[in-house]
Amino acid sequence: MKFIYLYSIIIALVSQVNSQNQSNEYLRKIDSIHKHVLNSKVTDSIAFAKIHYSLAELHRYSLSGDSAYYYYKKAEKVYKRLNYKYETAITLYGIAVIQTYEKDYTGSEVTSIEAISILETLYDTNDVNKYKSFLYNNLGIVFDELKEYNQSIKYYNLSLNLKRNLKGDFKTSIDNSINNLARVYRRSGDYNLAIKYYEQLLEDQNLIIDRPDFYALVLDNYAYTLYLSKDFSQLPQLYFKALKVTDSVSPKGYNSIIINQHLAEYFNSISNKESAKYYAYKAKSISESYHNDDLLKSLLLLSEIEDGDTATKHLRAYIKLNDSLQKAERTIRNKFARIRFETKQIELENIQITKERLWLLIISIVVVLASLLLYIVISQRNKNRELQFIQKQQETNEEIYNLMLSQNESVEEARNQEKKRISEELHDGVLGRLFGARLSLDSLNMSNSAEAIKTRGQYINGLKTIEEDIRKVSHELNTDFVSGSGFIDIIKTLVETQSQAYNISHKLEQDDDINWDSVSNKNKIHIYRIIQEVLHNIHKHANATKVNISFRLKNSVICLSIEDDGSGFDVNKVKSGIGLKNMNSRINEINGTINITSEKDVGTKVNIEAPIS
Image (cartoon, rainbow, N blue to C red; front, side):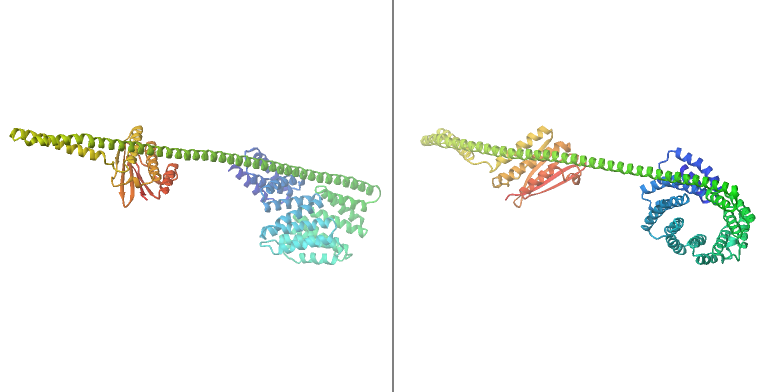
């Protein structure tokens, strides 16, 4: 917030600049603020750019070209880096003006064209067109100074066309461009057109009231054009009128230098030496407080007006000052070139740093991607190995189960053979002997004593009873157990073993109507594995204390239900688990269906339906 407050102060001071003296006064205030800002810990690049731009504007108003150029270049660098095109263009305009002021006309031309090229890429807003007109006006000045008058006229007209279509009050700026255009026509020798434009400006009755200093400038230019065209009819009255107006606004102001020089030149041309000297010395005196170019002109004019040693003295002063000015101009241009070079070097360094960072980023991305790819490959290999292991384990389990079934069938076959042997032994041996004993006793029944008859009858009835019992046992031994009882025995063994290992109670119910012999070994294996997987999940996740398992037959479909009293879970969140995937895969193998319902802290129920065929 403090930074924004300081920036607002600078902008307010910039907007209040109306003169060079006022600019110098504000510069002293802003320099102290700027030092405070630079010492603060602020990283807002665009805000710093705006600060530098504002400082450059103030230095430009104070005619401190090198400082203005320095701050403009700092602002330009930030604006270009952030791709702020409009701000870059108006900063380049400021640089171009400074270059024109310091007579770096070629540099100003290049800078102006660059700024215009940037503005051409933007929408034609009022502000964009305003700065285009300013840049065209600057190019007009540049080509005027380079004495390329046709080019100068071209750019002044482009500037005027844009200014006349701008929204807002741009009369002052338009008048300035017309005055500049008239000056070019005058310098190119087309006095009639120059006079025409000056008269157009002087027709404005309010000009002397609204802008008396500008009125005096236009009036002096008009008078000087008449002088060059050899029309002395209104001279020197127009000069005196212009001098009077400018002295009323600012005595010994900048415009009075030019007017006094023109008066000296006029009086010298009509051989009025005293008046010529008077106005020439007056111009020299005032110009000593302003830009040295005007002092140079005053010295040259005095060397032409004076005679003898005095003229020589002024000519030597002119030569000395001219050499000094040229040296200073070269120094300034070299300084500008050095700033541009340093800026370019910084830009190249930034480009190099950017490239290095880009390559570092690319290398980092490649390394990360390679690492990620390597991780994926390794993970995939591990998963493949795990799947292969699971597959082999399943194959091994199936082999084991088949061996269990084969062993169970062998045991059952041996059991049946043993039962058959016992049955045959009972039937052929014991039962035959008992039958013989019964016949013997029956033959002894011929005795007529009541007691003998009664005793023999009791023995015979007992033997009959024994016979029936043996026959019954023999019949039962020779009859197969319930078909398929071997698979249920395996399930019982699995449930009992797992329940004991997992420390949970169990209950197993089966429907005797299920003919397990008609169920394929493949389906039995999948049912066995599903029960094994469910019991494992109950132990691992449910924390249950009991489990109920039941087999039912419904419309040739085996209905298996497994229910526990565990903690339950959210079915939707674990649908992608490997256990459920394996169970679903097995269900699909036997063309069955599975339905899992679970409730938190109540338990889980797994219902499976598998068709027999």
